[in-house]
Image (cartoon, rainbow, N blue to C red):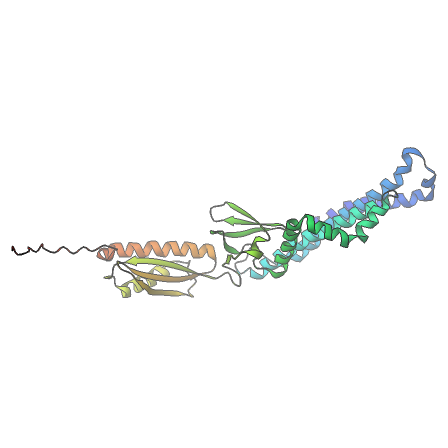
Length: 309
């Protein structure tokens, strides 16, 4: 109810100014000096009041619509998609309201009415001029709108950008803020995501598969490692019980590469699961197969004497 009360003040002020304008009527035309500007000032205040009311109304409608979606749920893919679109559209709507309000204020003054009318009538010419003089700024603005429509990522998506792993924290018309895992913030222009490749780990689902690589000697028992992996996953809630794989993916000169795949409900959980599994598997190898840790072999042969001539 409080959010609706926020609309009462701007509407009350605007209605009062409108009533005052009708109350003054045509008598104000005979005013001279400073008083002659009062009707114009009253008109400007009415326009400002309507613009203010429009801002509040847009914000209220945004809150009503987003109330249907809970972004704090674990399965929040749909909610994040809607939040991303609505936040961008909210900024676009505010920009349009400001543009219309400024134009109406200019039109209300007789000396600059032609300029105000020209602001609307010559939008095409102005667009060309602005396009040449501020190509990057306009391109970034359009890119922000395009991101809201196509949604290559959404709020709280897990991404890898510029070699950094983090989450989409904020999406604006001209820039995007990525919260890095160590709480740093990476700020990138909107055009970056349309021009350069990046990884989105939660594009279609929050579920994610984590990878762990282990390097051991050839003498390791892979069956024992698989049995231990089962035991490790059974005693943790981080695993979602969907993916569990242990494979030998490479046989190198000195070591054998073993890859473990495990799944989790989201990227932060997958990170914790990978760390946990890696640590427990290393403990298992150290305790039960210390001779299978990576080693370099050197074969020493007795020196052979060459027969004397």
